[in-house]
Length: 128
Image (cartoon, rainbow, N blue to C red):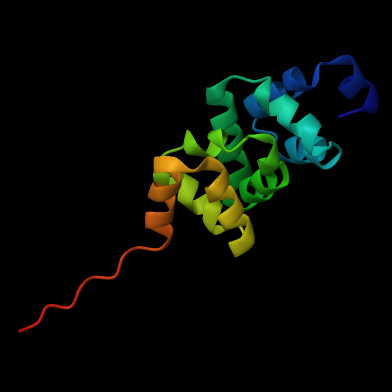
């Protein structure tokens, strides 16, 4: 991606093109060069299915890093749109502090479903 290309095209459109072409390297390059606010704007500017596809392309580790970077800006809903197993795999890649912060941020049933998968309840021992 040339610097001129990034300046000419609106950032959400550029991000959308990289998502459609499954260009992980370019997506990471755009995010590495952008502030959390700009990243949030870019992600907010694309359709929900493309947001989900973005997380799928990045994979759990990169998605966790991205979500941690922008979680204070109200972007937790992206992860909650994923099926619980995918959301869990992303949250598991976060540090404990990041997990706690993220789960507090999304709150409600979504946080409980993810937490239940991360820390499954132990089976009760049966007494003979």
